[in-house]
Amino acid sequence: MLLPYSPDLKKAAVVTSLATLLMLSIATLLIQPGLNKHWFMMINDVDYGFFTAFWIWLTSFGDGFFLYPIAMMFFIRSPGKYWLLILTMLVGALFLNGGKALISSARPLAELHDAVRVLGPALRADSMPSGHTGTIFLLAGLVLLHGRKFLALPVLIFALLVAISRIVVGAHWPLDLVAGAWLGILAAVIGSFIGSRIILPKLGRCLFIVLGLLCVLVLPQYDNGYRDQLYVLITQYLLALLALALIFWELAQLLLRQEQMQEIEQWLKITAQRFLKFGLVGSSGFIVDLGSYTLMTLAGTPHLLARAISYWVSASWNWFWNRKYTFAHIPKGNKLTQWLKYLLMCLFSFVLNWGAYYLLTTHVDFFADYKQLGLIAGVAIGMFFNFTVASRVIFSVDDTQKSREV
Image (cartoon, rainbow, N blue to C red; front, side, top):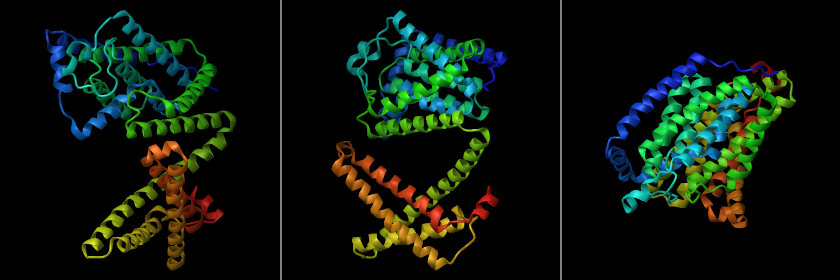
């Protein structure tokens, strides 16, 4: 049973007051003659070099399709608040789109022309308020009101960076960001208040799943103007997978008993911890692989032979540290037998890794165009195969040991 949400009116008042005072102070400063344009040029005119990709990646998170799976992640453990999340999104859409309709303002490109460094779509109209900034600060407002305290500062910093990215890509004036940020936080407060008065938890839960499914279907094909950047495309697929995983989790909560969900949570927690350790060991193994290969080639070893030897050196390194660290709770078996099993697993994993890459890039047009994604897919398949075999076969425990551990 979902309990009705009771708002913390004092916290809401503090958040609204602080946001209003801060935004009003900044806006008062920016409306001074020439200052809005001056600050825009200061930020936009910088050549960010390698970090340009970082700003493009950040600006994508002001898009609702990118941000909703993250909002799902924040609220997945609080089904009673799904409804206020949906209401807040509706209020935010009304404020931000209504603001653009009411305020006819030109974007920097329309006024400064070639002086603007544009990254992505060349936008010229409907400048105030910044929709991307409003969207990310809407989430920040929800975290301030309902999230854990340790999340507040990181989320606010992230929201601020996303807002600044709108200047970096040449899409908005600084004053647009101030208006968008204030409207986003105001929408979070109003949406939360309405959600505490109009209580429709079943509808909220249904819409929570439906909007997540929409992200799963749309994100792989969605073009926000930066889809040609591989790292943005990868992010879209990862967010779609995140939304799908959270949908399954929500459906499981609806269909399973509380005791069953607790068992699943415990298993996921233990598995995630071991997978993280497994990944850390694998990362160190990559360094060993690269280092041993470099040393051997510098010593005059033919590169193909050096590559073959370095691979098995790193595999042996991974076996040793998985034995000592990742699966330290497992009773230690015969080292030679276990090591040989691990090397055999690595051999099969290499075939799967390379085979997946070959099949995807040869027979699937999408991966033929984006071979890096084929490489990532192959590595992921190999890694999951290794973790599964290592957990179930090489470093296995009997049922008694498992039950004792849990």
